[in-house]
Image 1 (cartoon, rainbow, N blue to C red):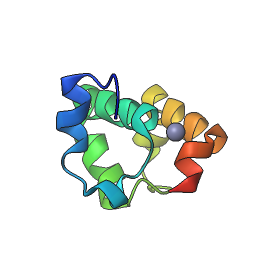
Image 2: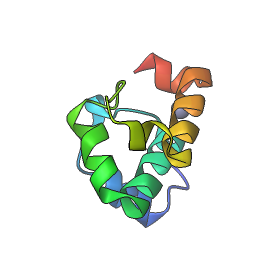
Image 3: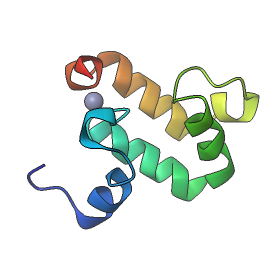
Image 4: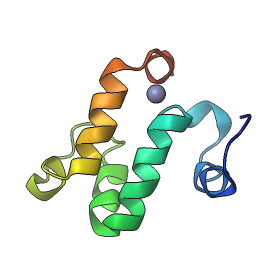
Amino acid sequence: MPNTPPAELHFAAQWIMDEYPACTEGLSFLRQLSEDAPRLYAIAERYGFCDPPDEELRVHPLWHAFLDHFANCSDCNEV
Ligand SMILES: [Zn+2]
């Protein structure tokens, strides 16, 4: 991953390369969410970042940013 800031690498290190839930850009939204709302991030993680049934998470702007990115990103959808 060229030009990836250390914080992104550290965050991404929790996954094995083949199991990243998103591309580097998508992961950066998840990282921001994990810092801004760790409790909501934990819920999203528990549901594999796929349609978590939590109203508070569903209206969180960073979760929306992630979903918007994910829906339109060919890198994410390749995974
Ligand atoms: Zn992506």
